[in-house]
Image (tube, rainbow, N blue to C red; front, side, top):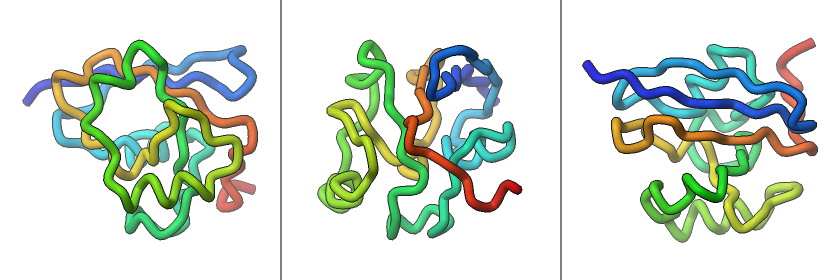
Length: 113
């Protein structure tokens, strides 16, 4: 099985965590396993925007286009930008190796005390 490297950049851009995931892994799940502040309240059902990430500009065009439903959810995300996506909608593939995403400054996982 292929490995895919993902780089998680903190909201303040002070730190980067690089992790290896497997081909087919969901970005939200990978982020949560590695203690990134993505709540994912709806558990990946695309009914919230609590897994909003900002994709590095250079990587954004490597992602499949967002669905209309995802775009609607991103309209509700605090601090959304042109390169914002929902982590629950990103399935990692070898083509996405080296993907860099930043946590939005407005992001806070209420499940972590």
